[in-house]
Amino acid sequence: MKKRVIIAVCVIAAVFAGSVAAILIMKAYAPVRPVAVISRDGEVLYRIDLANACEEYTLTIPSADGGFNTVTVRSGSIAVTDADCPSRTCVNTGFISDSSKPIICIPHKLEIRIINGSDEIDGVAG
Amino acid sequence: MKKVFAAFSALVLMCSTCASCARTDYLEERSHYAFGTVITAKIWGNPDSAADAAEKCFDELDRLDAVFSANSEKSELSRLNANAFAAAFPVSDELFYVIKTSLEYCSLSDGALDISLGRLVKLWAIGTENERVPAESEISPLLAADYTQIELDEESKTVHFLNEYVQIDLGAVAKGYAGDRMLEILSGCDVTGAVISLGGNIVAFGSKPDGGAFTIGVADPTSPSTLIATVDVSSGAVVTSGDYQRYFEENGARYHHILDAATGRPSESGIAGVTIICESSFEADCLSTAVFVLGKEKGLRLLAGTGAEAVIIERNGAVSTTPGISNCSYNYLGGTA
Image (cartoon, rainbow over all chains, first blue to last red):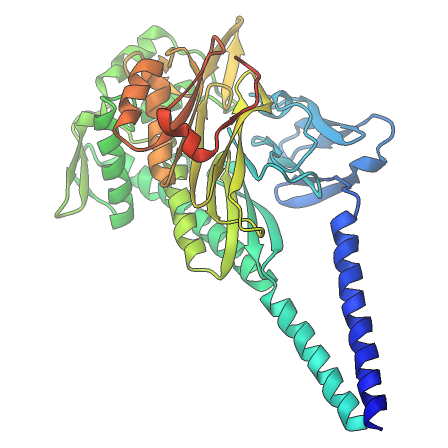
């Protein structure tokens, strides 16, 4: 009786440990799939899997004040390529492909941020 | 037998629950709008503590924005600006501290940083829909204002403007002070690490889940989406002042937002971007503006007495650093130079 209990406990423990190890390994080797999150005034408008963007395309995002930002999506990267904001800082930021720096259009309260990208850089001063 | 299985199951459940509670590598990523810019926060810790820390940080930023905003008529700073020429105006301990500390850096930099230029800032209106190149006749009278005409009384905590053209604008320093408040809040939360970007002003707290320092990129002023260098920081600040952050162009000329008190026009020191690395975000913000206006030679002399490190990128592409920059694991990636 005692022997059977010990075997049962060992089997359950082995299955539990194996499951934990499998989850950790899958997490470590999971392919990086950058996702662009486009928000306006804090509200998420789009989540775009950039790994799936085989062909380049554009989105026009209207702002609350009647303006616009044109967003261009490519495989692995995203940019604001046109806008009618005064400084066009968002356009000048160019294409981004990782989470180190978001694209920000302050007049239109638009933010494009990449999550699940390469995380070698934790932030960008500038 | 049943008792043994029940006990074992309870043990497994308890271990799983404890592991979830004790998890410290969870990353909470949030963004928020304050100080006229987008704030992004990456906070590591257990899920509940990281989310709670993000909320506390954003609440504090909203509170500070309501104190320091030059654009909101209801802010404490706006009320000060409306009344402090007529008579000494009492302010909160916090606003008094920020003005007093800023004035110390104005003096240290011999006016390269000058918080008294509120009227000039509004005249140029750079980064707003009203931005324009003002006539010289509009600029000249406002040159009468400078930081020495802001009088403080420590005992009564009052501020008095000695010149009618003085208006305080804390745009060059308020995000820096806010960064230090973020560090204070994070140190009181049960989190292991954080990187908060206040519109490009970076504050870092603690360490990454692997125990290492945070790697912060320095944007290339000629191509801000690319990096010219990286530095490593644990708890501290990395703050950049650059001519590419807010500007407009007219007749082929670029007019950026960092004004020189001596001319009333965008600074023409030859610098495109200055990045300061030091413990205090407030100090880094003050120094980055001061060095930008002073230019490379005078700027490096100013920094020599501060303990702050810096990366200075000139318009001609030359890159200079302070002697101790290697302490920050400085890594030049190439680019402008």
